[in-house]
Amino acid sequence: MQIEPPDMIKRGRFYFIYDRPPHFVMEDKTKRGLEVRERRLDEKYRVEAEQGMIYDMDGIGHRVWIRWYFPKSQFTLDDVVAKAEEMEKRYKAIREMTCPDGED
View 1 (tube, rainbow, N blue to C red):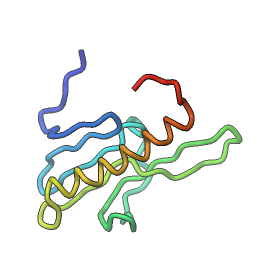
View 2: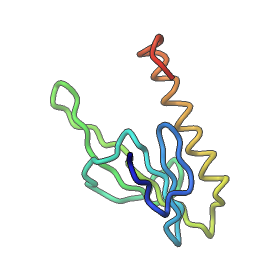
View 3: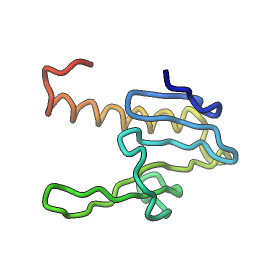
């Protein structure tokens, strides 16, 4: 049995949301464990975020977002959950295309 961090306030199949004042932190579960290489502004969400690197079969590195820091002064929990659910929907669509007979 895995113990959840006490600051986790919401979880989905592909994300976690933590209450880490002064932020709500949204973490992509599929990128969990990646080394953080950089922290910078994510243009899509307009918040600070951490990036890591994954490598494809040809050894080519691709920067990927790991977690986002949403300031509580600008975002409500509902705002962050909506973004997390959008990510969840995207991953479910990818999963359906690549594993159509897979379990949900």
